[in-house]
Length: 83
Image (tube, rainbow, N blue to C red; front, side, top):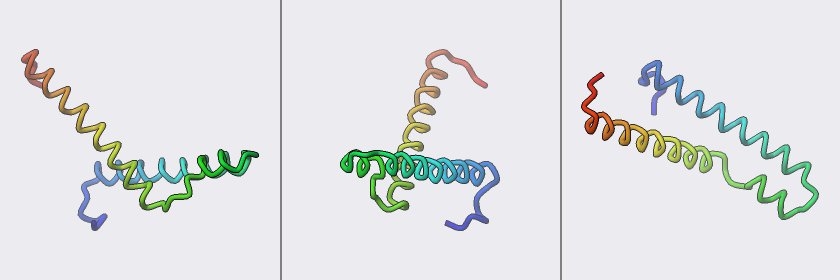
């Protein structure tokens, strides 16, 4: 996907998702480094490729947004409110 083709709102949202994912990655790496139990350390570090985790978290976020939109739309129809 070409970043130049994204509108400003979408680009800002994508950048926020990326920043959150990178921050989470570093937090869990630090927690894993301080964990004494090797099994717990591996679980915290989740030695998974960054790209795979990023797309997994993006999909989860988009699913949540779609669910929220769907519920809001159904409530809007049921209540009859038009904004």
